Each structure stands twice: as structure tokens, then as C-alpha cells.
Image (tube, rainbow, N blue to C red; front, side):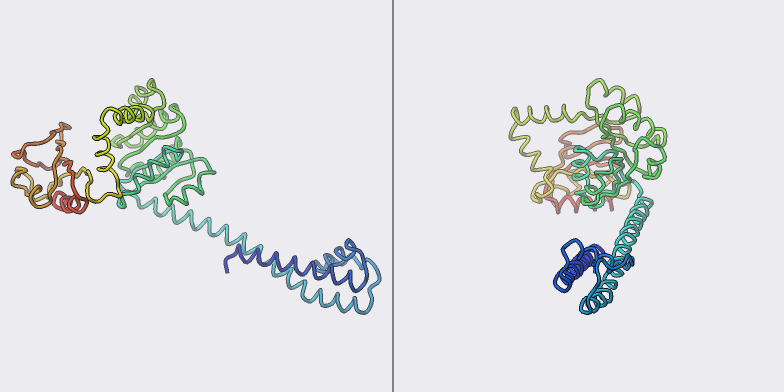
Length: 333
């Protein structure tokens, strides 16, 4: 039986025995409620303070029965309370230890610092991809039940502490997202993260425009202002409603008939140095190549059919989810 249910059952049984004992003394001895309750409690707890009044023969028999059954119930509830406290503590320790083991095995993962409204929504969207590993650092203890319910790996610690960043695996992480409450906290976090891992890709949130330059100077690769993005998105929905509707469909995870994906090209791919018209991507997979990002960062929009795919490129394609997965196997065998 679950320790919590065990404890609740024990308390209910003890209350039942107390009621029976109090009612018995009132009926057998004719005592008032307070005296009957007092006699029941000192009998069940075996403190031996002495009888309130002289007890009749029937009352003595009832007292012996109350001691026999009542003391057993008291021992039972004591055991239930100990079990509840010990098992709960052990469960917390084991749960935290399992989380720490999972965190220790992470490689090429992302560290999300902050689990407020933006951090929570960010993790929700990132976790859609099953092979995407991330860990959250959040020092607000009230958010621990929320993170556990959402099923994210987390450290209930201060993200600005370098020891916590190291514990989160920043040395082997692929990227870090700074979405703490204030821009000052994010600037300090970016500085610490950049010192610990010079090659880390860092994305930071800026609440004010004047903070963007500070975050970039601190070492952030990308600075995002949720307010600016929200305003731009609203404007585009007014100016280009059809385009934004298409993009919403392309980025919606629940849609399988149309999806937009970016796929890096591995050096072991079989279509390296082959022109798009000969690659069979359009013919075999019915996919549209929107753009190709080259290794030097240049973006080729609407590449011609004579464009060759090179190792290190990133192909941006649109089509059915199943066909995109087939293309990924070709580009990353």
C-alpha cells in the first residue's frame, strides 16, 4: 500500500477507536464528554495518569479491551508515520540521484536557464523533438513541481553560479539559453558561460533594446527580444496573412502533410558534389528545397537545379514529414 494511503487509513482508524472509547465511557460510566475523552486518550497512550473517577466492573472490562485494541492501533499509526517520513525522504533522494545520473550522461545538449513563462514555453517546443536533450536550471523552489510534471531534467540552483553550470554539463553542452528574470542576470550568466565554454552557442533574452549590445559584448551569439518578435509577428499577420498562415502550418508539429525542416549535410552523404537535378530529391521524395546555407554562412535562396550539395551545407526543405525523414537519412547516413 502507498505510504500516504497507509497514513490516512491509520489516522482514520485511530479516530474511530477514540470515538468508540469516548462513547463507551459515556454510556457505561455515565461520565461527561470531557472526562470520557480524557480517559480514552490516557488509556490509548498508556501514560498512566490515573483514572478520572472510580471505574465499575463493566468499565474495567471495557478499559482492558480498549487497551488491548487501542495500543495496537497507536503502534500501527506510529509505524505508518515513520514509514511515511522515511519513504518520502528516500524517494526524494533516489529521485534526485536518478536525475543527477541522467544529467551526467548528457552530451551536445542545451541548458535553459530560467523556467518562467518564456522558459517553460521554450522547453515545451524544444521537447517536441524526441532526440533533443536539455536541462533546466531554476532556483525558484515553487517551480520544482511544475518542472517534474512537465518531465524536464532540472537543477534547483542559481544559474549564475559557475559550479551549477559545470554540474549541468556546460563543458560538453551544445548551447545555452539565458531567459532569466532580468537583463542584468542574463548578462552575468552569459559572461560566466562564455568563460567556461568558449565554443558554446548562446542565445539570450533581452527585455530592453539597450541591453542587446551588452549581451552581445558579454558573449551571446544571438539576442532575442520577445516584445520585438511579438510586434513583428502581429504586423506580418496584418500585412501578409496568407504567408504567416503557411508558415504556421509548416512549423506546426501536429501537421504531417506539410513541414519545414533544416538538415545538415554529413561528409558521408552519398549526394555530395551532385547537382540538385541529379540528386533525386524532388523526384523521389517530392520535396521543395527552399534554401541552402553554405559553410561560410551564405544563404542560397531558391537554389538553381545546377547547385551542388557540399559537406557542411544545411538544406532547408518543405514537404511531408515522412519524406523529410527519408531525406535526413540520405544527408546524414
